[in-house]
Amino acid sequence: MKETDNLTRGSVGRVLFRFVLPYLLSCFLQTFYGMADLFVVGLFNGPEVTAAVAAGSQVTHMLTVILVGLAMGATVMIGRAVGAGDESEAEKTVGTAAVLFSVFAVVLTVILLLTARMITGVLQTPPEAVGDTVVYLSICFGGIPFIMAYNVISAVFRGAGDSRRPMYFAGAACMVNILLDFIFIGACHFGAAGAALGTVCGQAASVILAAVFLKKRALGFPVTRKSIRVDKKCLSGILRVGIPIAMQDGLIQVAFLVITAIANSRGLVYASGVGIVEKIISFLFLVPSAFLAAISAITAQNMGAGKIQRARHSLYYGLAITVGWGIFCCLFSQFFPHMLVGMFTRDRSVAAAGCDYLRAYSFDCIFAAVHFCFSGYFCGIGKAGLSFIHNIAAILLLRIPVAYLAIVYFPSTLYPMGWAAPLGSFLSAVLCIIFYIIISCNTLSEKRV
Image (cartoon, rainbow, N blue to C red; front, side, top):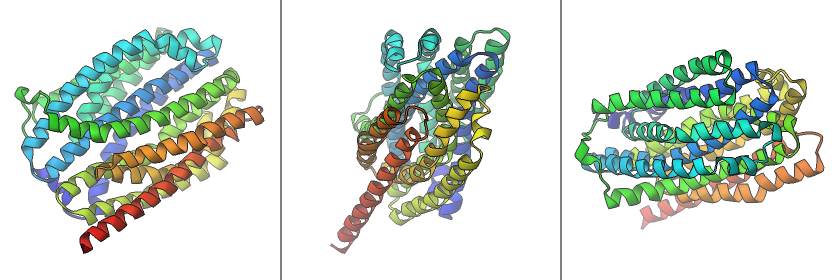
């Protein structure tokens, strides 16, 4: 298995960069075409359509993040099997994942299509944007099987140590989506519906390309039709790792939706400003997100190979790079927020509100970098529950309460509300460091015994 050697041998720094760069680019492409939706909508439509796409895309992003979290269970289990040289276990995990996520996709699609209008109401969507939001969500929900298939196939490749092919899949989705955005939104004037159609078609294109690669058996171990069945042991392993990650990521996104609902209750200007900044932040978070996935995969393979110290080194490299990136993003957002917010709106009121929100929110880039890297490490060593614990604590104790109090006591600006996320991430970072110290001490004690 050539890809296994890439993650368990050689310089840790080079291995990490070789894995993370294609993953980072694929994340960039995914986020870019999401931002392109908002950009093109802003060019051809008013604030009500912008608010609809911003709110709707947050819901679809939340779903995608949850699916990626679940799929991380497959990534980690495949990574461990590959690291241990167990091709049979890797094959069984791929087959189990295929069945599990296919069933989940069908059930989820039906439920969400039936609740699209209710979800719009829960978000406290401004009345002017309700109709467009429902249409956007309904179309995107119909495309969930494609979103599911893309993310699961990508997770399988990454577990096998290959982060390049998922980049190709994301590139195909990006090109198709942006092209169709200008056709559906600009030429055909479909508005929010055009943005949703472009997204779904882009995901479909990526799945087709992924299927072509899978047919060529490019994983490094055999996968046949007979492999597509449920193995109880593999199912248990996928769920044991994937469910805590999906829950933690889902709760984070729920917290963002609650914050969005709080902002929406203050009117169209704040709703648009918050939606735009959330898109910007999702772009800035690409680096720590990429390292989270890379550290998870590298840690899983090295733990499977019994190379614990090497797994820790990948965490240290990730922390140094992502914290540095976070400091840069924070400083840029303090001095030039208008350069970022201004790309998505020509409305001066929306831009002013967004800049206030971004100045405070950008500090999250520093603290989130810390807990993202630790979360990747915890997932890789099979302790995904720790990531759930620190995230739920941050959400319940700081993120939501601070956002609510800020909008109540400071209704004329979004700046105080922007501090909700950084404060939550700071708590998460502190808890992660404590968990890591405890795990390290326990490991040292076991070695001495």
